[in-house]
Image: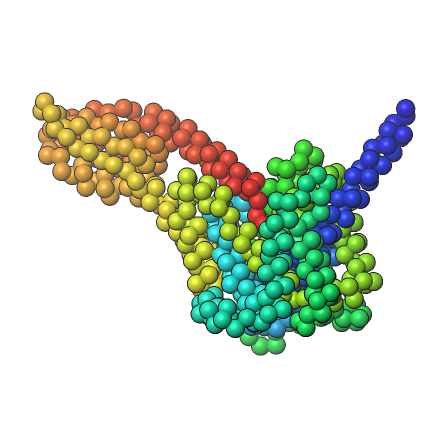
Length: 513
């Protein structure tokens, strides 16, 4: 068989695998695009536009071939706040400008720098967002309306439960039940049918047969004529700049972590993170210009794509085509879907963002305090405050670990023995100096350096004290500082960096929703 025939056969096999995978991803993405738009306080069509752009643009240009992009639950709360503050038109403009920043970062090839953000902060951010989504959408499930913040949602929840709106509550709870039960009941090929599709179609069908009088999805008859065009601020630029930088940072981190996680799921070509970040930027700029929500790589859809057997980027590209055809030709079908059904879908999606596996892994590594601080900040204050608080706690924890030096001074047989253990860095130098100052002049001193890490400040502190002490008539015996520095500094530091990298990649491989 000739080479050309072999290539044609391989291409046909790829198409044969990508086509059904694209349909599976389309069926997963369709209800999620609508639901995330609902949670974002945006028109439903904005979520669908983002799904189309994510599929077509990132599918064509992206550096992670099997990753699927679109609107993400991880940005829903942030976008909701921006829309409430600035309006939809200005939020779309912020999305477009954030995309330009992402393109610049991708062009400068700094994508891997985003992976330096502590996974504990990323997972804490997503968990906090998940809690906010659940607290807000459960009100819609019960037939009411969400409040402005987490505290108000909690405060109003008992009254909402006591004043149930029958049909809406029944349909919302049915959606949640189907989302939870379907993965446990589906066997064989039925596992390929995504739970979100089963839940939305099933609950919507019940609502139609029942004739339930509930609010439903509304899509414009002509999507192209109803697009929301972006608008720049006319006065106060502060909130707009904040929105741009926030969207660029969070969307980039989520997309890149998702790309790393996607790489762990298949054996095909590895992701080019800089190319992927540039493509995400192009997609966000296009989405913002035509009235769509911000776009990221989404692990749920990517996992579904790989599980369905996708082999090339054509699967993600074709899923965007199916979404476009649905929006332009079958939009009236979406009008059968009750809003409470989408809210029920989001309650389950939000709950899954609080991943117990991540919490257990972070607990083993002593990073759960960073996770908890991030969650508390996101839920109790706002998204940016939560990320800032998480990063602050992560830095303080690092400083505490760097300063966790233990200095024991004992006296035996006319000799002072100084045992130094832990990490001797600039943070621990004051503690070391205080302990050494207690040793009387003119004594015989033996120093045992069993340190994990020795930085230049620690090196100079011991060397300077030893020289000064000897000049006062005392004697100091210890291992060569250069040998200690090489043994516990350079070698250990390299090992620490490697361990941190492995830990971060493992957490990333477990997925950002």
